Length: 115
Length: 114
Image (tube, rainbow over all chains, first blue to last red; front, side, top):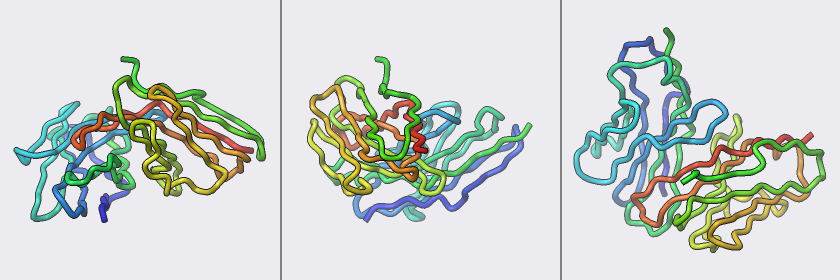
């Protein structure tokens, strides 16, 4: 079975400080991991993904994520948060060995960056 | 490309009425997904298609919900009859055929059933 856990419903951080949004996953094969962001009244937007290779993945808007196989984690990070980063963030996983196309999403983490 | 297109953006209807949501995926994408998002249940996958064929409809809540994909550029999600508990934001997403490929989401349809 495939699943994603985002242990924090909310993350609050001051502008200019580093931020981390946590994600752990469970998958039987090789994990393909994704982060999405959702701004109010909008659809989800793709941020970055890990398929293979370097464990540190860089994506849009200065975000990056680190794949840790031993801890089955894929935490989203940004060195310096902006107020405009405030949004709902979703982690998702797919079994790379599966022929099925669906992603398994976490419940989302609401990030609030205050000025 | 204009991205995934959904219509209508907002729908308000009375309980018992039929509701049809529409989606045009990105050209060339093989997969199409329908999701529902609510505060209580988060993001739920309802059904998805591959090359216009339904692959997994286990997320469809009940027989009142049905989805079709008559061709590669159009899909509908129908609720008949609608109930207040169907109120949610419904998203359509599409992706290429590879397991490495991300999904592209439409703007959503906000459905309110009174």
